[in-house]
Length: 332
Ligand SMILES: *[C@@H]1O[C@H](CO)[C@@H](O)[C@H](O)[C@H]1NC(C)=O
Ligand SMILES: *[C@@H]1O[C@H](CO)[C@@H](O)[C@H](O)[C@H]1NC(C)=O
Ligand SMILES: *[C@@H]1O[C@H](CO)[C@@H](O)[C@H](O)[C@H]1NC(C)=O
Ligand SMILES: *[C@@H]1O[C@H](CO)[C@@H](O)[C@H](O)[C@H]1NC(C)=O
Ligand SMILES: *[C@@H]1O[C@H](CO)[C@@H](O)[C@H](O)[C@H]1NC(C)=O
Ligand SMILES: *[C@@H]1O[C@H](CO)[C@@H](O)[C@H](O)[C@H]1NC(C)=O
Image (cartoon, rainbow, N blue to C red; front, side, top):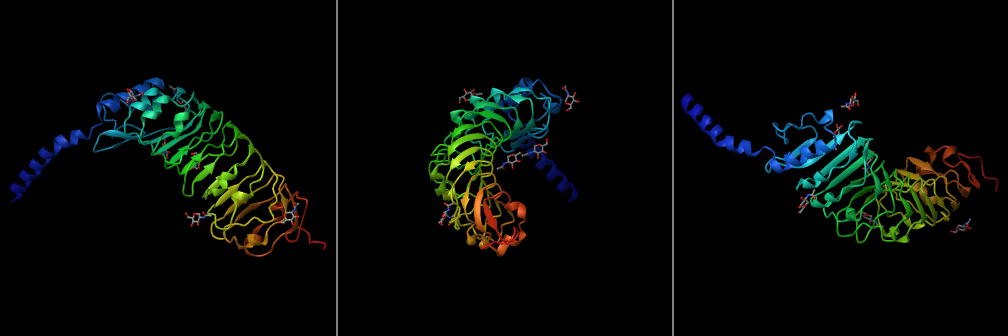
């Protein structure tokens, strides 16, 4: 009986062994990665990337679809030893879906056109690098992309128009040198509760009112030079957890704004030219934990109740004539 079991185990292993070798990374993907390593100047961080090892299981920052032996995700992060542009050969990894290039201060140049080859691209994160130039128009052609994070780079030029027939869920282009106006059709078509962060750029002009139709879950446009109205972005039935429009030149009347009772947690409208008063409805925003309305032209009594007791005078500083707790009492 014992012997039988040993035999069948051996037989099983023999059957399995060709399958095991199939799990090795395919030659095409290994070649592409070795080209990437070479273009990056063979940095010490990629020492595990060698001709004789399996790129799916033995290479730092690489993971595969093990059934196909093809590279699914690539993560190269946190080194000053990588310099130069993103190599073209990144487009030679047919099923590459997740790219992370993070904290590579000497990574330069524009996005390579070969990226368009990556039809399964789902998450593109290139953050804290010296990536520069305008966003190429192909950036909006990916049909599977859901997370697009190019924050903290040196990207210039205009914002692209994101088409509606894709799955963009999260777009972070903050901390770059983007300029010009926000396109009136920033998103074509329907997006369900997207995240948009375009803060810390050089965007000018009015916020297009078409963005009022979008039910953001997170909206950050702080630190730009945006003017005019933004009241259409608000509403009690919106889902935003965070709305940050601080450090712009917005000058609407906020008296009739309403806020989500169940979702809004953080509201920063500071450093604008917003007028009117604070609507009493804000006391219904029970999740609100950060509020900054300072440096505006607001006037009138600060509503009492709900989350309002948490906020200090600094939330209301430097306005025209706000009064009542936590500021001095109203005189009439
Ligand atoms: C990428 O790799 C770094 C280590 O180099 C790790 O800290 C980070 O969590 C990884 N990121 C992703 C998205 O896998
Ligand atoms: C790689 O970076 C480390 C520190 O980040 C440095 O000590 C080392 O000399 C670098 N190696 C090369 C080959 O540049
Ligand atoms: C991209 O795809 C085309 C055709 O599908 C192929 O010829 C090319 O080698 C691929 N790679 C790059 C880096 O463009
Ligand atoms: C984009 O990446 C940065 C750096 O890793 C991170 O702090 C930020 O939260 C990301 N943005 C989104 C919207 O996930
Ligand atoms: C916002 O989205 C949520 C969930 O998708 C939905 O319940 C809510 O009615 C939407 N509000 C508006 C104003 O579209
Ligand atoms: C703001 O709008 C309210 C009505 O919603 C109006 O009573 C008030 O005078 C307006 N304030 C300014 C400064 O225009």
